[in-house]
Amino acid sequence: MLEVARLSKHFGGVRAVDELDFRVEAGEIFGLIGPNGSGKSTTVNMIAGIFAPTAGEIIFDGVDITEAPPHITLHAGIARTFQNIRLFNNMTVWENLWVAQNSAKQKRTGNPMARWMGGSRRAAAAVEEFLEFSNLAHKRDELAGNLAFGEQRRLEVARSLAAEPKFLLLDEPAAGMNLEEVKELDERLRVLRDRGVTILLVEHVMELVMEVTDRIAVLNFGRKIAEGTPSEVQQNQAVMDAYLGAGEGGSDA
Image 1 (cartoon, rainbow, N blue to C red):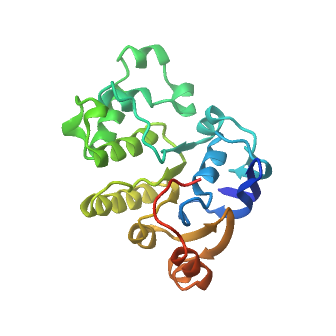
Image 2: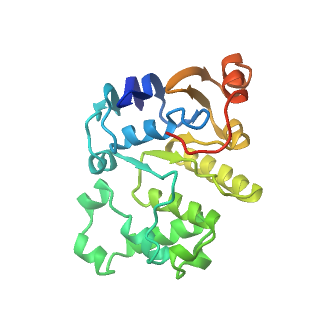
């Protein structure tokens, strides 16, 4: 479904991502991991169309989207969350989900004016489904900015689903969550996979990554150093060396 070939992103003399190759098959949960600054979020930003690659190509569903801007990647069926939460804090939980319904399918089949004026029963029903799925129905009228951190993470995932994506880019969705919330996230990701959503998961919570992913690629200093099943990656010496030598703190490139 998604193929990244010789993908590179250079910021001046810094090679944030350097000739990266991997392929995500339809129906997979594919993990992308690595120490802080290894290029994971930069990779997500290139796939989502926020950063233009320095070199290489991105193929999605057989179509070259290497130079596609974010609104085109969204219409192609790719939605994403952010490492740093970006909600509409002065809007309610319900309103955040309502305005996120912007898929190409909805534009083709729906009446935009009717939806914006509150006349679309289907759109309203979809919002209710996302609220239930994310366990936020009881917070529907709360301002997003007043939610606890873990709740904001859940809302951001739900908001990405409101666009009805085929492919979901999740950038550290478990950050700030407690153990119970991580367990619930694991369950939600499995449900999404069963519903046909393909997922690229960038995450530092290794318990989640090793439990829920089908395959994993590991980055270090912008280059892929390993790829395989969770058990294969866990036993890879280059991966162990990268993590043992990684410092704590800082944000990912």
